[in-house]
Image (cartoon, rainbow, N blue to C red):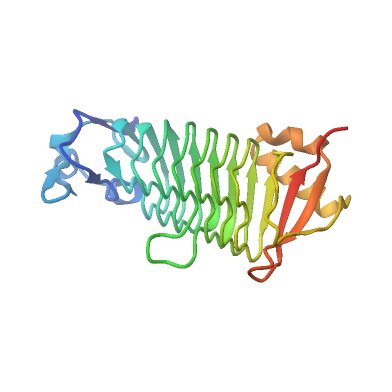
Length: 272
């Protein structure tokens, strides 16, 4: 069977909550049932058939085509299957993801993967602020799974992150890994100021040798620890773009002493 494809007919008149459009919710539905699904806008609902042209049958391989950022909460609470976005998603894509694979062939808005528990998210372009962070009103960010951003990420990436892996090939904004509770964040590009602000635990790996840790981080030297090499090898297996880190030496910093001070920041050392 061909993948189920929903192609956006035209730009909606307002933001649309697309959380009902996930493989596990659409599986087994007839074409007529799909057309009648109600999607919530700001103050009105829209029938799926009025917003999308529907083709294909296999909802386990769902494709949302032609997205322009007007759909929010794409892939929210998804549990299984694959969901591919052709275009740009709005805020909260992959919120509370529980399983499956979400692929965005474009840019993503703020709060990408907020509160996700498992599964994987890949964004070919840029992501907005608070990627992998806590949902609004919650105290813990992502608790599992993997987020890979091939482009840049905005401010507060990994804010309150509890567990899991966040990999950013491009640059990260201000306050990366702020209030981080645990997990791993790796950034290949440059990083903004105040990285690791109030970080309690976890590991932040920075390929930016010019990055200056906050004064509340203690220098731990350049230890040649097997654990660091194993961690880098693990990252490379998930994304070969991080292979340059295998040849790097790292300066290790521990903090933030303004929190528990058990976090770890590994910064690539300048070449001599």
